Length: 440
Image (cartoon, rainbow, N blue to C red):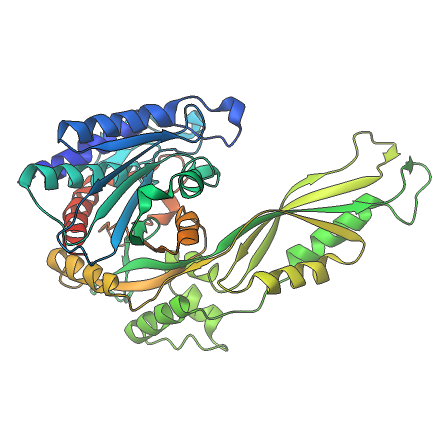
């Protein structure tokens, strides 16, 4: 029988999906969807007698923060956060309406079903459950429902850290995306044991612009310092370059657990083949083994018969913990002396302990619902709002618990058409999350 907690988690997730809080990253294109979603959350909290504060980094970019007091005043607070914005959609690519929150064949469809209105609905339901039942968690819980994560979190988490750190007073750890979803542990036929991945570290993210300069000239008279040619050579070199493997603590723990379960060594000699044998998990793990620099935007001349004076490329950089200067040095070496590098945003990686007591809490909560489930640390190749909270010394973890069928790749749902989550996985998430937040 479905409990009220589970029912509300599903209802709230569906209601939030129906609020079109699309974040294009372009200020002029963004409406008030995030604030409308924030007001919805605030109203549901108020119904349960939970006080909250709505803040706007900019008009329409609303976030809501609420605190439930815990029973142990000596314990550091736990920040539990979910973002209310979603990425844009191409509606023609969807089988079901992206903002319809429809349920088909046991799956909830909609933008945000996994990223991450499912978790926003879940933690909202948990907060109301505690208030309704008079449950006092072990430690202070700060619930944050945030704007702007999909464009870097500048007007959500980043703004709160810079302008309202008082809302996070006493917080020592944070819990949010991306992790908690189940993947096959052994891959052996008939063995359906599951690993639940917890992100104990996240790659840093940086953006830079590389510019090559030369002399403008007529296209009929080639020059030796053609900016387009110089840039093309640098882009090709960057594309061909492979950074060395760097075994972070989180990556090595993943290798240790999966290696034992699957009979793999993950040695330097077998690493590529061993990772490839992990199936759909392989792309997630492979990207976490090394730093990456990816050219994403190219620009130069406007007229075919004019050699432009300069050409540029923008690159997306993902950095392992402690590797910032190594990446800068590599980028300068690979790009060459003829190309200028201008850094834009540069957010360092985050890293928390793979042996923290909080991970034991995750394991205990999972075991109550899945006796064969094993919680396994890993390094997230992307970044979340935890990068902002890290500036306050808050250690972030990614764990949104979802038990899914063996072939369902949760990570592939992020930003995809027909984004969906199994309804029974969302109800599982509500049960496990309630246990985690009560005892963490």
